Length: 350
Image (cartoon, rainbow, N blue to C red; front, side, top):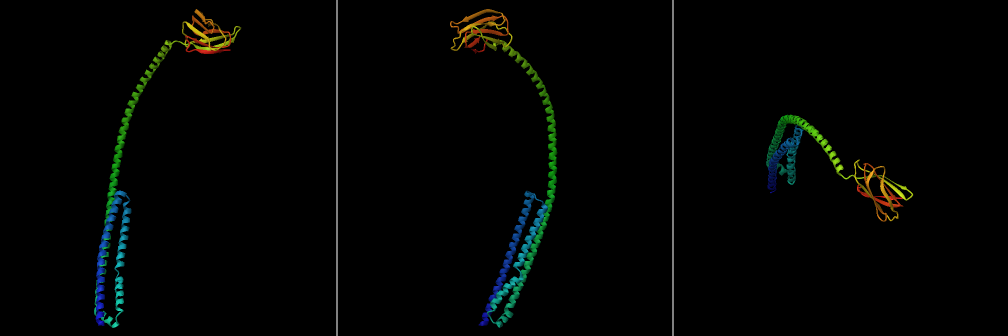
């Protein structure tokens, strides 16, 4: 009964080992597929990165090539190390031995010896054979992966070399086109400046002629303006301007002398003045007459009853300065107006 139980337990242990081995094989196959997919995805990222760098970033292709080689090498070494670590013989063997010792310690040494000779050892050999197969597959995977990495490096090298050549050709073509465009623009600018110089000379000649014509017209206009001004001045009524005046104390009161100057030396004709006491003074106007040495005709005088207003009118035989003399009896304020005065003005007598 004990022998049957040991045999049963041994069979269960071997079946468990077989399940472990089979599961390990499935895990290896799954890991192999995962690594192949990851490697393909990484390769796609590298190629996209190279294309992006060449097209949009424009970095130096030699630096990109070195960086890609370094990255591919690092990834490859990490994958191979992980495979070596995960599928080392001693790791799987230690797991099997550990579980075997744990289960076999519960039975007798004699039964253990017979079980090992009759059933366990063939199974262990079978397991070792499967482990050896797994190791061979692992080596194949590592070899395939290393070859794939080398192939990708080779593709990257060829790609970067081709890109270097194409970039050199593109740069040379671009430089040539740029130089041709500059020459063409320079030629257009030269032609434009030549034409502009010719047009500018023509324009300057026209402007000079027009300026001469305008200067002549301005001279003529100035001459006409001067003549027109003289005609206007001549047509205007001449005005007498007060030049000087003096107030002197005399025996009868005060004597005021006024000198008027015309704007030009012309004959005025009949001249009239009016003198008026404009404040509340008791002074009276005693006399108003023409002064000086000139000869007068048609002399007329006039006084109000209170002697507050007096007029004088005469026709001089000469032109030039006109003088009048006024006598008042006392201190007062006089307002003088006339037919050739622009407006009346006042004089304080004291």
